[in-house]
Image 1 (cartoon, protein in one colour):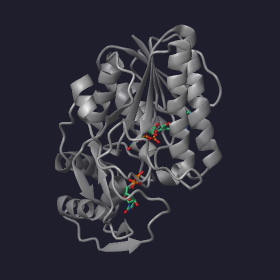
Image 2 (spheres, helix red, strand yellow; image 1 turned 135 degrees about the vertical axis):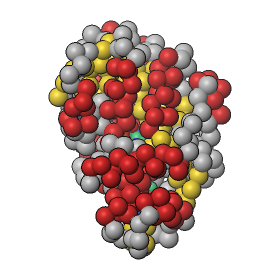
Image 3 (spheres, helix red, strand yellow; image 1 turned 90 degrees about the vertical axis):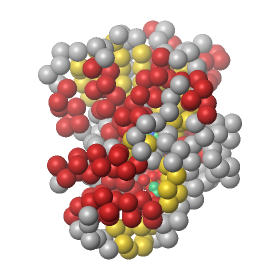
Image 4 (tube, protein in one colour; image 1 turned 180 degrees about the vertical axis):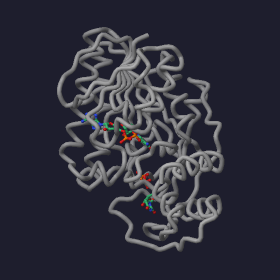
Length: 307
Ligand code: NAD
Ligand code: UDP
């Protein structure tokens, strides 16, 4: 098959490109290189089945493909808050352009939504049936509401035009090829620990997240594309850790003597996050396999190699 991946030069996108090429497909990686980089896919460039298209998803595009994965959007808070209006445009116009192409050529479109649609959740763990608790005027809203609107568009294109949509809500995913300047907690703590710099815990570190290794996530995305299910479906690893527990694990695994310091908690930072993945188990027969220690060891190895 010929497969288009928007945001294909990003962290998750580059692993997805790699996996689909391995499976024998031809892949077009569309990216504007805002948070992604050509370096993430340079090892794929020699493959004649792999093409890179430098393009912004805000503008319409046209490719003759059999499937579309829409991943284009900065994922880390510091990056999506740099230009919030642009983040809304990327989410909303990006979804419309992907859905228009899918409608025109009659192919399925998998959209990567996020656990952020649940905001600071009042229901724990979060099932897909929970409608969320998002501050619509806060600093995270450009991303959270942008992603919520993109989900709305997917379901409207499905109801109005029978587009084969697949909506996936990704929970915190980590692994090799997270950008050094990404700013998210796993990469920040590993880089700080390896450099012997202070580990920056925001707030008191009692907030929780559930961390999924990237190989598990890519498998879930491919299974969702292969299914006849429209979603939304949560994909994430349900093992939940506080940020302080994560810091302790990374200090131990890196054998680092970095100090821990506390900094201000960013506005609207969700207090807890844990996916209910019963639907993914039932509909996709998907269950993540890599536990946090094993995933962190692989990620630490990667960062040791590039720092
Ligand atoms: P990333 O920032 O590494 O990748 C995003 C890619 O999209 C980058 O290559 C970037 O250059 C590209 N991009 C951004 N804006 C674009 C635009 N306007 N036009 C074209 N390309 C553009 O992030 P990631 O972690 O790989 O996330 C991929 C997708 O998964 C995103 O949609 C993100 O919202 C979603 N997601 C990720 C996580 C996570 O924990 N990593 C969690 C929830 C949702
Ligand atoms: N965080 C932290 N130190 C850091 C980066 C993040 O304590 O250096 C916290 C952040 O406040 C949040 C959690 O770790 O509570 C996860 O943050 P991340 O940016 O990785 O993802 P998100 O908030 O989008 O889940």
